[in-house]
Picture 1 (cartoon, one colour):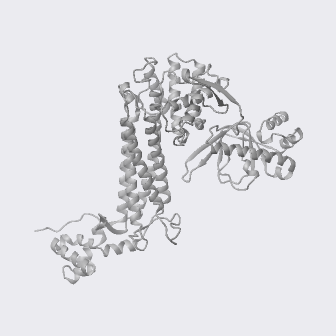
Picture 2 (cartoon, helix red, strand yellow):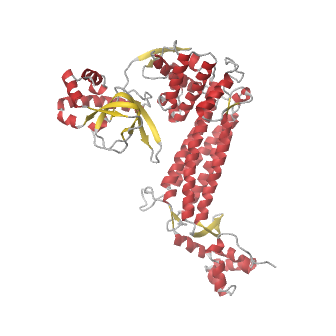
Picture 3 (cartoon, helix red, strand yellow):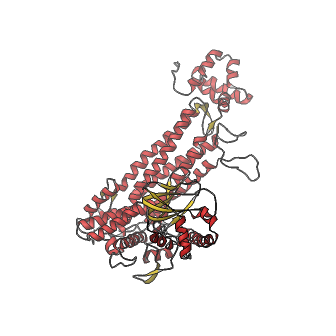
Length: 621
């Protein structure tokens, strides 16, 4: 690589600002060039830090894995960006992973360089301190420039109906999003908290751009730029520029404009223009062509919910499998079944856990059934469903592209006026989400009861200990994981009520309360996904059975008398049960003492295998 090019590259990196020509040459001579193919990792989470990586060309995505293996994409880096500067100040492992998205050339500067070049190191460390400060300021303020390493201070002037405003240059959003940020500082939860929302909005805009081009309403150059910008968002880029609060007035207009502005400004860059030069690609005239918030926004939400349901069901299936594994593991453990918290009849612990698996398995069907309602959309209805400002062939064309982009059998609503104002599908799906939450809460209640004690409770199972349970009671360990799932369920149940009330609040041709419906549903889905993963990995997989305790309670229970009822009769059984309670004697002892059955016959009837399922009964009368 040309020496002049390398020196010019180094001079363009924030990390090396202030170095003179001689110092720049020393840095250049100390760097190692490396090439990476798409999909390769530059470094992985938990690996030792070894160098700063300076990106010469290509693109790298920074990501982090959850405790359960799910990937979260944090940012993207390209030419003049750098990663791993923390290797200079500390020896702890990488907290994130860097994966190459497109073929990339990078230069490595190892920490040994800084041990050998003190004066240069001081200048670079000064720059690092400034960069880290800027990065932290961005993180604390929920800044959304995912590719920029610092704010330049540069702005651009934009205008709307209400006047002119200065928009920071780094941001892809524009003036209307800026106003929404100021107006709706409500929940603190921005659209980018749910990347699937931004991606689904981009899918709708992508389909619209393709339809508008096919109908001759949008030039090929504009369509291509919008399509490319949308595809980048769908692939995970620029989602941090979707910054409007989830709770907002305006029936979702701020969300729609956030998408329109981000896509327009990215399309302008692709076309070779500056952000904000909307005469070449306008958020409303071009990106929002043939659309209204009232058809684009609910369509995007429905696509996002269809996609989110897939992840929810995936997590649910994993939890069900864990319950099934425990059912098999505990299939031989005899215990006492209970109704109304009173001794009932014997069963196995495996039967109890298999019931939980089946109970949750039913919810997969309910979720998948109700989510199908979101396949019907009102694209082309525009403002109120009449289709004003849309080509007569637009609806059919845009639906064709939505099917292709999403891979889902999306259909156009039969009556677009009805579809624009009706939010019944959200009520139905919310009810299925609530039903899942109710069942999870019931199961969590059971786990807490079965593990209660350990000395003065049921103590039939042991939950894996997660943390000390008291600041005053030594040795106490609480069932914190089932407890948190209970609380998640309460919130989901409350969110379902919110969805119901918001759906009821619709007026005339539009329901303006859709943002709170959307926020409630996505919050419920996210909490349930996280809650079920936590329950699965931090509780269910680690449960053990106290077999002796379970068996002891079976043989000491008055409930045993139910198994003897067909042999000695109801009246004798009732008398025996009362005597056992009054005298604190075991049923087994009293049956033999009263010569009601022989020991062999009693042992056969009370054999665990005979008490956990149907069996041939003696004839009565």
